[in-house]
Length: 270
Length: 67
Image (spheres, each protein chain N blue to C red):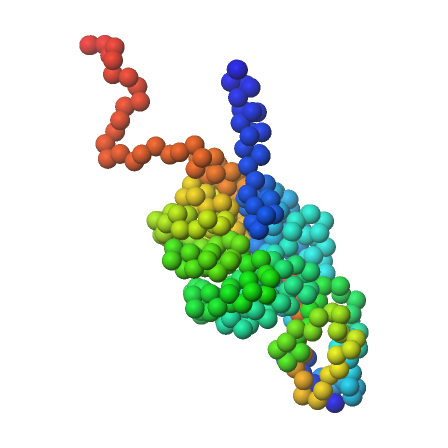
């Protein structure tokens, strides 16, 4: 086999690298949020460039939304819509919001968010787990946005969540993955899909998430608030693929001192 | 009679149905809306038969960009 044969063969192999949430296969490992998008035209170009197959939407009072056109755009892109419970502060609010989303969008999938306060937008672990229990019992496929806490992640998986989605850092902060060690521990702690959700600032953050063992990355602001959203969406697509490939290929161990790659044997004495 | 729709006071006919309320507000045309009445979901299949009472609180929600 020549080198020119190897690359396409690898490409085919990696292209057939789907992951599944609740038995539903996805070939793209990038999930896109629509929050913060400057216009629907920009959103559509970003969705296409990202290659995503799963896009989050929120529920708001009818007068306040641009619902019709947004959903038309997403329908046209052929992506699955994942309603979230953004803005909910209690399990009761989140459960009701999920039930309303199920009515509005005819889906039992939900990205569960239960926020503790407005300053950090960090998840409220107690309310989150309570809501997850109730929604799983009600037949929902729950993708739980959570703290980067391996123990809480395991509790959510045990509760029957279809995916555990730890933050890298607070929503919209762009601070990247503040505790990579916890993300690696989460990978060991749960068998369900692990999706890095929140805090991604740029492409290298998304690649790191995949290198740490995440199955996918969910991001919104990093693309929608970038100077060039379509270009950043493409960058994220490549980053997720690169990180996934690197995870599979196996990084070399870190060393304190150098190790020459050029052999010393046969070195001339000059 | 007076009810509250999406946080604002609204005047509706006595014993108006959820379906009538939505039709009056243009919500009936939107396939993808959801209704909560006093904190409980009203499934689409019950919009025609669910009647409002004075003081009811109704939330009419639709998908929008987010998350």
